[in-house]
Amino acid sequence: MKPDGATSARIARMRARASRRLDDGSEPIWLATLGDFTLPLPNFRWRREALDLHDSNHLTTGYGFSAAEECRLASWELGARCYTSIWARLLCLLLMVLGLVAGPRAIVAAFRAGQRSRAAPAASARNS
Image (tube, rainbow, N blue to C red; front, side):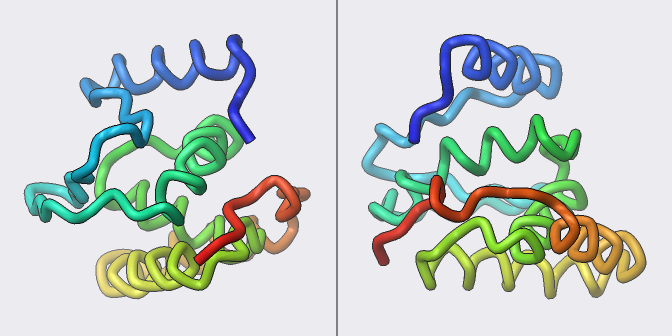
């Protein structure tokens, strides 16, 4: 589900403040970045389908784009059961585990906040 124009504009402004390029998922290669580490990966279908919901979740939670905040957001998304794609959930789980190493309290709090949220899995990425 694509965000409406106002939501897209808010996401673009948030990314501009964070000096991050707006990734619309259209590129064949995805530069997976976490802190100073960047890994070029194929832009898998499950990722393209999850991207709009993920960006909207940045707005919902207020989490930014630093490595720590991406790990918190992934934890929140797992708690909220945002994605039905096993691959999207595995990526979130990997980020959650990385976050647990650096800041366990914040990660657990984000996961619990996700569990209490009203995220709509029906609007999430489905296909693996």
